[in-house]
Amino acid sequence: MKFTTDGLIVKESFTGESDRIITVLTRDRGLLRSFAPGARRIKSRNVSSTQLLAYSRLSFAESKGIYRVESAAAHDVFFGLRSDIEKLALAQYFCELSSAFVQEGDSSEEILRLMLNCLKFLETGAKPAKMLKAIAELRLISLSGYMPDLVACSVCGCFGESVYHFDISEGSVTCAECLDGLSTGIPIPYSVFCAMRHVIYSDFNKLFSFSLDDESLSVLTDVCERYLLERADKRFASLEFYNSLT
Ligand SMILES: [Zn+2]
Image (cartoon, rainbow, N blue to C red):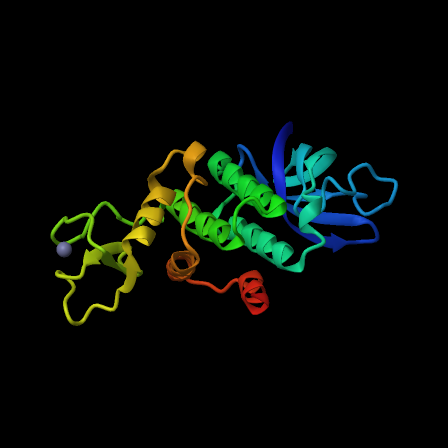
């Protein structure tokens, strides 16, 4: 069977003298692991289009569950990410997240769109890296079936309080009055509560259209990372490396 699709290379490893094994976040087939023969040869047209972080048009041949790239043409290789160690580390975390939350055969168009936009904003510097990290984590986890309930206080239903407490194990918020003495929810100011609501409930076209002051942005970054790690229940080497740089 042969087919052509678009995809972001989220993982690469090398095998033999000139071959790559790549993992691709595709537009319409979830995550695919594929052999990319000859992709390390200098003359190969597939060199840049099958490297990590390339977004490419890829033609595959599949036989008995084994995929091979027959041809590849890059739409974008995100060149600007490769010369900045912090940006590259965060981009690699986005790739590791995609690998962790998407399976072969999943509907992956929205997650691909999310990752491509995060990478482009990161490359151009148009949005703060902290904000992009929080958006990638919270939107991805929501698309993966773990959307927190941020409609209002989970006990009394109030909305508009100056501080809420976010419970990372329940994925819900409680107002200060309803918080019992035993709860260990993370205090989040109303601005962060609204930013989190925006990230999970807004249309994609408006997803990146908000701003926060530095202090609130730090709270948002912290709470999104903790929620993601709670739900993922695993460690991310690329996240630990990124955090060691910042
Ligand atoms: Zn309440």
